[in-house]
Amino acid sequence: MPGSRCTTHWRAKRTATRDTAWERRLMALYGLLPEEYERIKAQQGGKCALCQRATGAVRRLAVDHDHQTGVIRGCLCKRDNVLLGHARDQIEFFERCIEYLKNPPAVQVLGERVAPVESLTSNEEVR
Image (cartoon, rainbow, N blue to C red):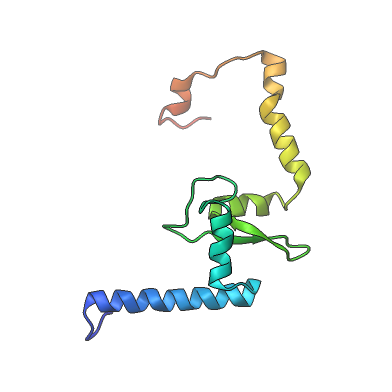
């Protein structure tokens, strides 16, 4: 609650407190200064290194690191950071993804059969 402060000052204080907490976590977890984080982000063009869309304007980009070596790799949006985590950083997994997208097994069996879009987009439950 704002209490005796006006809402504008309360929001400013809350933002400053969040920023300070983030800076402490950045240093504690990764040994990074905020300036170093910003330099990494700038090196990536100010966007997520993978999707090249997320800028961190709504939610800060996550610091990505190799879980085996601890080496910091870059800044990723939450979605892409979670994707890497689920894949356990296995390059082979992503190579299989690329091969799957280039040569889908169903196309080898069925040819380029197109699914009826109407049934895929209907609100009816598919069973």
